[in-house]
Image 1: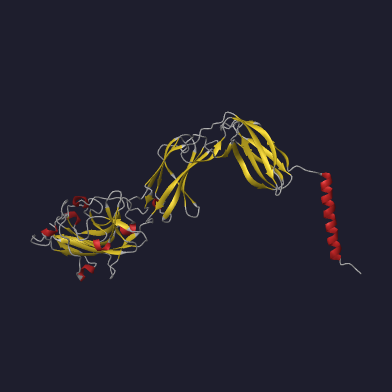
Image 2: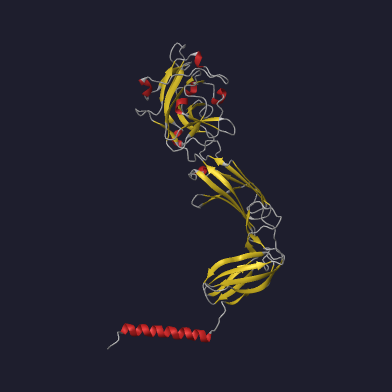
Length: 468
């Protein structure tokens, strides 16, 4: 009977393998798992001076194994350089600078977590422990002396974060976080956030004469990237980490929590009225009940309702009467925008400005402004971007101050008036227009010159409608 060729080949392979294994056992009986191991130099001085800072540990394994490299001090303390790491058979070398996993000495207090630390100056016994599956560990030992080591830790003696909850939305309230770190030793300092997915978000230091890595105080001013036009990280609680690592490789970590709330780039604009007019302008007689002063707000004027206000034609205003306006604001993003006094309907005298009514400029607040060509300052007349019914309020628990916001994706109608009391002969008629002001931030181009209208003032007591 003829034997199939496949069986013949299989028998040949098995026979060759058996002969090979027997030959290996004869030629290399009881080969050690650790063929050789040791440091190139038995003395190092890790102090970052470039001389004998490092040595190389070399070892060879004859078979696959799990290895640990442990150093033991003269008082019996042990330090792991490698711990239970899997290696395949072969030759290995690794640089060693005296840095091991972090440890804390007895009766020692260190702020933060020591992640990596330099061994003290003395002679250590090292052990390379190799263990293959199902067998007892094999150990090779030797000594290594550390001298002249710079063992001072890169301690961060101060690590403060304020506020711990911040709202990067340019409303002027808790928009920024200040992080203070004091380094006791020259070290590379990095600060970053870690999100729920483990992603790191870097934070840059503020430059105030302190060089990077220099010992001393370092300040990090974080606003979520919004000042650069970027969207801030999503709302949530993050881990804020400060890492200090010195030239020897020692590393200390400190961390705390930082919560982002109501973050986002505020976006708003003046939108046209239903008929396409951006700003309604009309005139109205003045009444003394409208007079507002620093400590007293007068009656509010009614919003314009006359169809004539929807015209784009020039307006003639008798001196002493009101130039009344009306417009619509839209918050077209998912972030509430803050506003402030005075309310829509407030009447200004021509010589008054917002500050004269106690409406001082507030960083981060949005206001509607009116400016004319004879105005001596940009948008001297200002109003809140919504009535009380349009706004939501929020009280700061730290200060007790109540702030008012136009909700996200909301619209509000704003109106008000200026009592025109003075004719500038060289600038009559003149243009007046509206703007949407984000105070101490910007007046965007699309909101800086909206609904311009020609306004002509006339003296009702003059014999004719001249400008004289």
